[in-house]
Image (cartoon, rainbow, N blue to C red; front, side):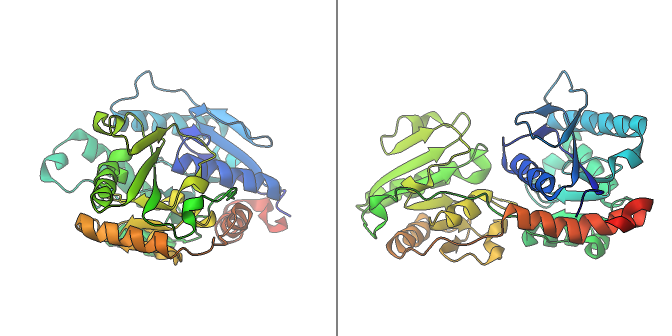
Length: 359
């Protein structure tokens, strides 16, 4: 049905190495399965995707500062697309702050509405560089659709750039299929023993220190607690010495079956794929109120103010572990691919490419 449609994704790293990268990989895979001609423009490939055409651009010799690396990537992509002819790439969908594309997905908040709230940061070249990248992209007449990963991010974008509202497209973010094999025996409402999961490489933003304090408070209240930390990159030494903490390496096969609850006290989280994955696996979730996934109507999820005292977080966890809910049926990747194709890609294709009428 979609054999004549060509879609090109632009992302620095292609593969399942993070939330954004997993989104691009899984969406691309689903598009390939639909018969779409999928192309990827990237710096490096972590996971191969049969059926997709990979275009590698030059990687910088430096990785820091990150804003310089992104400027380098933007220039490389622009040069590559110009050299090979923009029309040959079909509908270009960027997941980075680049130029010359039709669709952009925002996997985070606008630069001055998320992490950048303290005045000194406004004086740094990093903030100005990111702000320029963001503004150039969103104010470009070429960008026909802006796809935020959650309603929260969409609201922040419109508040910062009101003209974006007419181009906003909320198509959702599903969770990969999870196998809830061998349920944890503690799950049968067996409090006070519980295993609390925490998942995330960027552990500072995702609230690992707060999660540790919450679990420590639960222990003081008489509960037998284990904090299972998955994928944290270089966690603090205080956690390594704590006997209630178990740290395991990142894996695409997250052991949700071991968890009685997932704790996600992030300072800000554009979406939070692990929340959707946990609910698909039947694991209850307690997350902060600055998490995009909170707006998706999940059952089995408790939302707590990011600034709430530890006692409130503890109460929410005990309540969720004591009253578990069933696994949720979420939007699948094939369904998202169809929604994205029909509602975003094809209208752009029909407008810009002469042979689109056959799609």
